Length: 297
Image 1 (cartoon, rainbow, N blue to C red):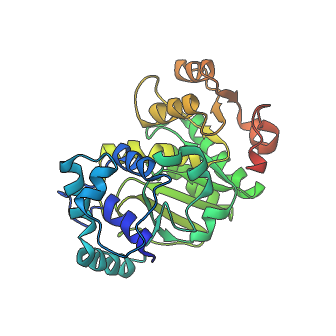
Image 2 (cartoon, one colour):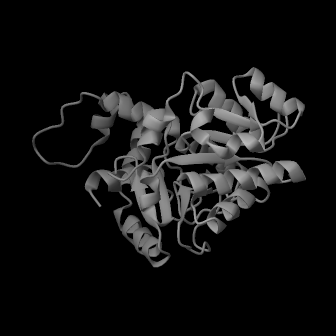
């Protein structure tokens, strides 16, 4: 791991301490923007509060950054723990960081992805699937068909490992001999690796589930997919709705909703999503809207 990668981990990862206040996404974004075009001193020396002040950081933020960067011993311990659990960090400045996240989310992309499983899946073409935990039978069948067709057509399925649509699609994909990237909102330590499966967790490998983590990982699921399928959602509420609306507003990936006649699906279509049936899943490439060319991204 390079010093730059270590610095990213120190600034963005709690390193097992739930009370540690790491940099928020806006703070990290502003820090990077202020450093653009900065000429570093020729002599090797420790970063000082005055250096950060010159970048526009307040005294409080400057001191916090220096405290975070000083946790090198704790970082060494945390990396050993991660290795014991089969977890690998991929920071935003690491060579293996997904190009689509950098392209679509820019400085809003997660500072670090913790991976457990086959990291080579991050280089494969992917289709994302999102949907409700409590799901109707025909919507569930749609989610499963997305998983099977992803496997048949050579796409890696990206989903969130939640009960309902996520797990149904993931299992259908794996059973069909496909590949799955599961972006979880809880700890990686209890996840069991399988062939063709990669677990990802944002920022920490051992952080427990929280609603905030679940919402935070939704944009990553949408951004990793060259197209995104919505099996079911509730209008105006829930992570599936929030993540899909964010996608449509920011044009992260083209969105295709199961045409189930609900108010939620109609609302998403009014924002730019396309309504489709199970039969339309036979060839993902034929779903490509005119303004998208996701096969060449």
